[in-house]
Length: 467
Image (cartoon, rainbow, N blue to C red; front, side, top):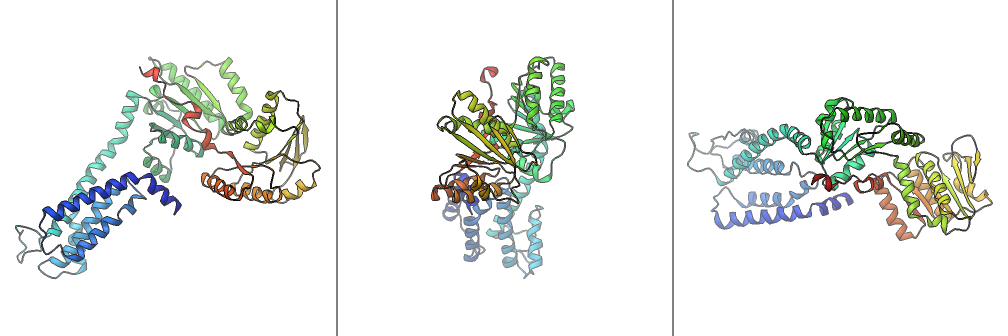
């Protein structure tokens, strides 16, 4: 229900226009048209009810709304008219058959005794046949346009540019695609294979897709890389992203004219390779375009500590507990250490990390302990500690585990700030509402959606290049 309400708010201007337009049509028919016997009270009531309830369809699809409206209007008016106003009495089957003939632009002449065409058809059937004809003709033209739409759009991208190309579709790249589309940017996604569900979803978002070998020069040419604003590489295997980056550079060097590509964004999953890659790009290989290397979890952690540096600066003895040492947990610890170093303060500072790794270790101010969250109690562990944790960060792999552990700890430690990691935006919103009402110290560390945006990554079009 909540999603439907949000959807209704997002298309409220379309709904207002629909009702105003329908009101104008109904007013015109009522005052400027003379109805015959076919427009009885029953069918008028049915059509009015249909017009009133039709916006429910728009909540689920806008792309096919007009088709559904014309098809349904033709079916309702056609079936009722053929069944009740034919000269001879016809069965339901015949009435259905006559109605479906309308969509083939074929009208069954069953309104005169000899089957000849009358001078004037029942008014209700006039509505039916013109609605059916409009549906059929518009469907044919739209099908023709859509068969050429992709070629036209790709031609425009290759010719005029100012678009964004994203290689490989996954959860991370989807976040960037969604933000770019929210900012009305043109996006082309290249991948070797798309599922039918993904393909339909991207088409609904007006995103162009190219199914091709991503290292093939034809993919670069077809996606208009030469005149793109940015190219983003989101492979799940870092070696694939790096290989594609080198192939992109080869393609750039073959171009006779200079590329207008402003930035190539490379996402690295294994952050331990990130510094080496940056050093390589800076000192060894000089690309024809700017290259930026990112890791989303590092960006989340960096953004968090930039906004929450007071945790370190304003605590005389900060002791952080980090539960989970996965992709985000490692970055939270690393960025916290950097924030402490850059602060220059000499306050005592410690981090305790709980992870399923069997080896315990101690490095500088970081203590790593073996802990199985599925078998051991986090509450019991904290109770046994002699020192008090000033802040708790839960960075587990599943949203529900973060949430459950956080809620349990908030009851036990009502004054200790507890930060959790979520991938589902709806869970984060629910948490915000719940904590506002209950005053529990539960907060979100951040989400990949927060850093995979056009603004954060600096993918805006440089207007100076377009002058």
